[in-house]
Length: 186
Image (cartoon, rainbow, N blue to C red; front, top):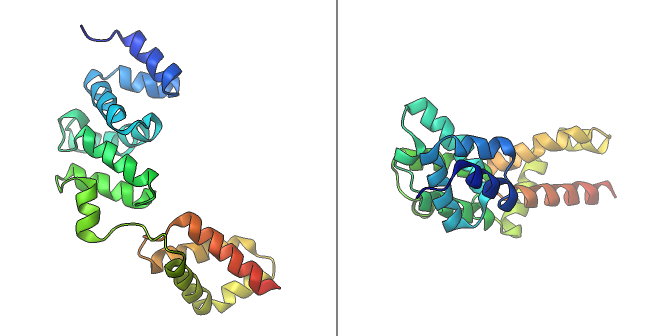
């Protein structure tokens, strides 16, 4: 006997912390809710699974006319992607790209990451080299920052991410950039 919609809605909101809007979107589409339940069972992170399923996967379903539950993306693949994001193996930009590639049938996210070297760079030494290169290449922007134009830090972060081909850990980039800019002020 399938779970009653109101029980599923209550489970999604009370136990998993989904918003009423998110829960309604899932409950109104039984195959999608079943897919979501399989993802959560495998990943144990309902919010991240919700973001992927109601965000990019639903967009891809709308664009292609193929329902998420009928696509080449398996619930286990979404759970694996959640684990890659939680483990900081990939960042959100790479995760979005992986979802599209999974949709196209290129395999599991872990296999794609390993095959193409897409793992996020969390090595402080490597990130420091990217930061140093960008600071050296943009002395005018660094001077603007020192002159009080702190909004240029976003440009520098973008340049660092570009230099790392999107693979640098964004939190580490921001922290190291702020540290180096603060140290150069002294």
